[in-house]
Image 1 (cartoon, rainbow, N blue to C red):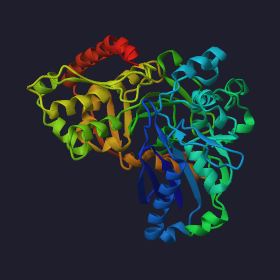
Image 2: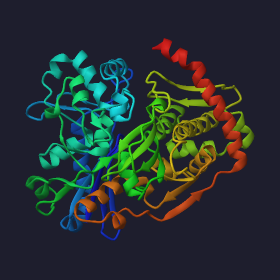
Image 3: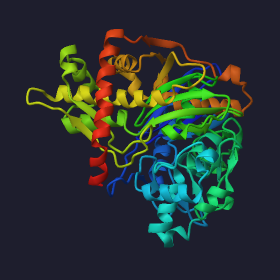
Image 4: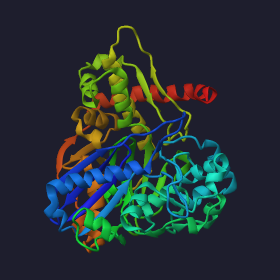
Length: 490
């Protein structure tokens, strides 16, 4: 019996997995993001722990016998967040999250200080990454920065609470801008450029290795066996790949979480920073991956549902689906840059836009534009991966947004690729975390990292794809035309 814990942005998920690949229980606890100033995005780590207590209580009430036979725990979570701790491991301030855009100036400073940053890390300096956040704290909160003794990523702060050990792993550490991606080790040069050293960093393990053991107090609290190992785990997207069995070169997925991702596994370090593509370590030894990231995917749908007065995201997508092809062709365009953007623009100052609205259109047309605009953002990301080998012809579909079949078909038409939905695809990261626990307890990759059955395939429609390609070209032109306005407004 293996437990996967996935600390997302909007919720913490828990999943119990048997050694016959059966998911016997899941539990969820919601989280919210605080935005005290423009461009800021923060969460209180104490809320993560409360969410963990919530999901574990749910599981204990329904599956106490299974928890009593637990063999291992795996962790996945939102990447890039900065959890700052003092000498007593007390949290110094709210965690600065992956979709926080305040540190644009610090990205320029870091790039100037370390000209070969992209070669070392495989990535451009972007406000979402952890390193520029620490430079921002050093500049704007110097008294607090002087008290920082440890910096942890979100899921690794949970590990500290569960085990008493400060440990991270390669896939999540690769998103800090402090990891040498090819060497899979901390870069002293980049740490020094941020006023830090290895002493501030957790030790590193592979995602499929044992990182630490649960403390006796934690085991007693939830009725767990003694000395339960905790796997290194993974950042959310690498964990989703493990959960879907997408660990061989050329295998990948489209993720529709709060953010949107196109992810492709590889067997070597392949940076392409010029297009704001991410090159990270995978959660398994001697494997890497490429990833394009848009900051508002299902998050844009959630925001639009609230703003337009729909009951929920499903209601918004159902309304969008009712538009005729002619109404879709005349619908507004939507730029989904509600939190700025990463791939391919690396522009934290980009904003969301509905463009070309008319008095004859209702909220259904705006809803369609949002669903389409997210697809266009993913298409932009896919185009940065066009040099991947072997070429992509099909991708899996994961994340909460993958539950809507109409949207899935629209994405297949937009991308011009076959998309495959899998049983359990909406819990990919939590499933991947549980599988990493299984591997840490002695499981073999070929046995553990299997691909769940395909529940549905979405084949691109040629006529719809051709129409969407034309609208995507307008979408790209709109961004280019508005970029000077985004910069001047800021």
